[in-house]
Image 1 (tube, rainbow, N blue to C red):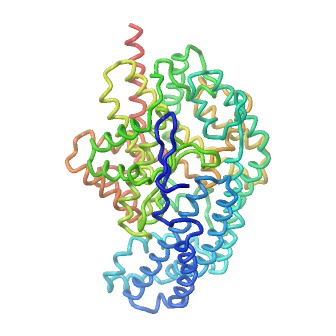
Image 2 (cartoon, helix red, strand yellow):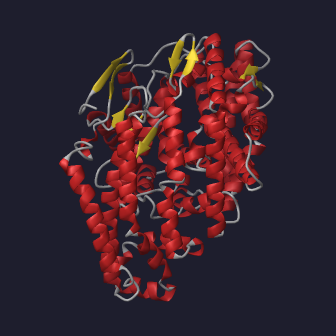
Length: 602
């Protein structure tokens, strides 16, 4: 891919990312040198520190952690580079080989580092506190040490941990890669064209109902043809997780995710229960309203995200999308817009749709010594603008949290969606404030409600589906029909009676990558959306110092628990009222839409 290139499209010149800030090329001398040095330094680290962590002083342990942090940054830079190359075109055999080779080599290097956290966790609490008390350098790493030691009850013997790590490349990692390469290689026949996944999914938002139906049928047909493979991948990964959970002693199928997120199971259950109880006043109510707008008594599944008949029918150019988001960010805090603007000026964004490119969108933090990158598949739709706002929110968060260093920059998933959803909210509120036309305001409100339903209701339904899959898999292998039945069991409950499902929709579970790559990740979206709704309410109250506290929260990265991060705003996610307050925001927007509808009828 050329350095700092753009692709001319009907939406404007779309940027491709410049990965030279990581390495100048897959075959570059810089990358080969880093690759070779990683193995040597990893072996040297093991020789220097293995078996000695509990024997030395607090300063000695701080020096070891510092060395480990530098290694983690270097190794993370290499795997980030390989991963971004692969995401740019996973159909390239050269990219696939490069990604696979890097994974294998870095697994070998990491084998020499595996002892470190295991040995750190074996240090007795009294000894660790003594070392922390005597060393200011070690105290800097206290948040990371305490966070790492939360894994102590689930830690296995060193050799078993090593086996789990080394087998990962040929186990879970291999099935993840198989899913990625299969999905990016699928083609969907729509009106005589063979499309990749992303453009086909985009047609579900087309103004032409016939095209939406054709796209849905094409999706179902291709998914059905490949369902045996996706069923095998799902069964294998669910069993793999069960084995790991059993060995480590996790009780619930989602407990390992809760631990990784540093969130209590009870807090997640409170969120799920609150959202589930509110299905009728949220999704059921809204989709009944949308069906009325569409002139029908119900919506087929391919019409769920259809453009509203009164929505402005225009494509949004890239430059307009950029200015919309930066203006909204700048209205909140100039520093936020300044950070976001670098993604455009420095080519940290890859925006065009290309064959072989990963579908969807993401923001990759890479490592603190570098900077994040954003992947989009921009097609000029209003939702694409919100996706840009969402991913740039992640990017701003990742830049700010990078100050914490490689070990403490990463934010638990429960708070990782905060800045992204907040960025969407800023963009939405900015657009709403500029809208004076009643019909345009109605369209904007409806669009935001749909996004919120997709983020909250849809993702909680996904979480419920995953729970059913992993619980059922414990009793034996699942057939494609069984998985389809479990999928449909949550769809009707969550979306309501106004949505009807056509033939083939039972296969749509197959393309959701989060089920494969990050089991139970999905509830983090709902967590983030409800959290931001509550957070934004605090902001609207013109609470003095909000911007500073917000930036402090983002800069904290992974150094604080969600309770500590939310306390300065007077919020507590463990309380049921917290979730109700967030869901009330969505319900309130639907109330406003119903009021506009009544006003138009009078």
